Image 1 (cartoon, rainbow, N blue to C red):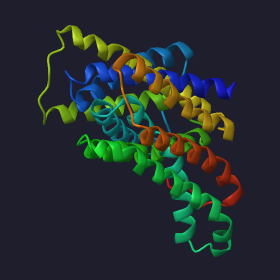
Image 2 (tube, helix red, strand yellow; image 1 turned 30 degrees about the vertical axis):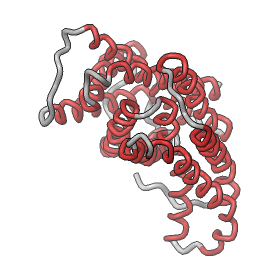
Image 3 (cartoon, one colour; image 1 turned 30 degrees about the horizontal axis):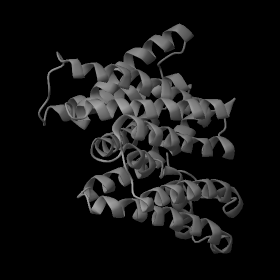
Length: 295
């Protein structure tokens, strides 16, 4: 059942990215983040009320940190979606699994656990392969003057890794997934609303504004499914199923937007997926006692 939740989350996020792609010519990333959060707040508030889930939390600062990294990841990802082929933006965001492996290796090295270094060789190779895949994917974008957007997309993966770590931490302390998603949506609405005060905003009385509604609903559904998958004990198989979102995004990009990637771009995408799957399996074997996560 955990696998089904992760596949569903990946599909919802891919559909959300399609709506963002359609909305991005008319709304900036901060606007989309704000409206995505506002719609998510209403949706999750109704869901929490129907399920009898209290919104009172005993770990507010954990939610604050989850919002800081999560909202930062959203802004970066939405910017990348607007300026890159859909599959490229999705793949760079899904580098989060490779980033988590990099955090574990780096943390162990910083803590001086020399005995574990010998076991980290395959994991280090997986991380290096992941970043090699990034270079392969970004090389085509250099020719299209999209390097900055590519780097922003890569940053979204980094921040997503930190957010996923915090989601797991919230699950371990017993936070219901609906409450976690509610506070994340609230944080996105507030951060986006504050950011909109410093940039131009656009009217909502247009047909294009209708794309914002499914963005919020699909985001809330995706977050709920992903949070449930992770908090119910994300097995290696479940964690790897997140990469199904790249397949969905590639299909949508080809069918709806006519996205065309050169062969080296597709090879880079495949390398990132393979390295992410390998890193997931190798983390447990190479780092049986990884450094504790900072909450």
